Image (tube, rainbow, N blue to C red):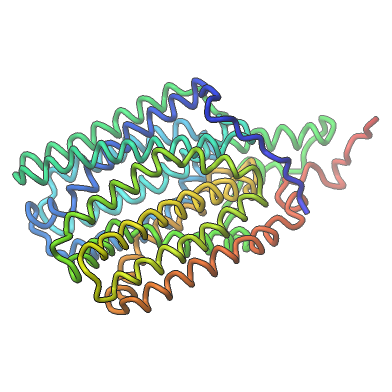
Length: 447
């Protein structure tokens, strides 16, 4: 079994390095733009552009399906060309695509722009993760990602408030102002990322290490090409695919607060319509305040798998509380149940996030962080694509029993993560490390 040294998570008072502060600033700026976009985009495209909700949903499903495929090649590009430049370029592309939404007036241009947006976002996520891997010491990555996640939620809250202003005003000019804010946010993000220290393409250290291990002799041509070009090794890594699949099941929690709960409230207690937004704010504030503290318990693969298992149990409890709200209870009781379920959900979300970050990095080879993070990130795109249809059918039609089925699915995935991680970790160092030499280039004697 590959050995992974125990990570040391810095305390909450440990000062951030300059690079981590810059990463956090970039995260905050882009998240403000994202919050404004996510809050206002659906009504902009339906009310202002004139798309039907069905066509809007179809376009977004197609876009995120394409985006889920794009993460691996764009992550591979970050490995080969360097994650800093790749992330900055993809931030600029996102800004340009959002700006193009200002002139979209029909379904086909919308579909093209949405596909480009989802592709750039998926690639940017992979490149950012690779950038964290290149700039943050191994033992500090989960803590750094927790800080970035807290920053992300703070930015989303600010952006959502600004997007809410556009929704309240309701004019075309107000919506265009929100989109302009998003485009400028990603433009600024790209410029901020360029201020980070340059990170060498991840494949170069592998080639140097291979040459050094051979005592300065010529590295076998095939091994050198493998180190230089990398290839989409993650697509052949069945063990990592299993871990990614398990994590994807847990990510089905994502559409709950943004889509399912508001529809659930509208169907069962229309007078509580305001509560859907309040629960979303509760989730955002909870992650902002407590994600870093929650991540401190994750210090390696065993504790990461344990955190994910605990997340599965907490998400089951959350679903059970939501299921109780299907019973004929007074409005105040239903409100209390929904708040209780949302509190449990945010706790489970933070546990699952912290564990999955550690797992995604520790099981990825150092010279292919970009493509591996891109592959792991496909779970988000799959949850965004398939989650709405699956969950609305299961929960809105299935009621309380549907919630219990979903909770059991979360628990099963949480319990499966530990065995999946142990299977993926088994003998990993022997087949993920690039071969340093062959019989034609024997290892130099040591000692």
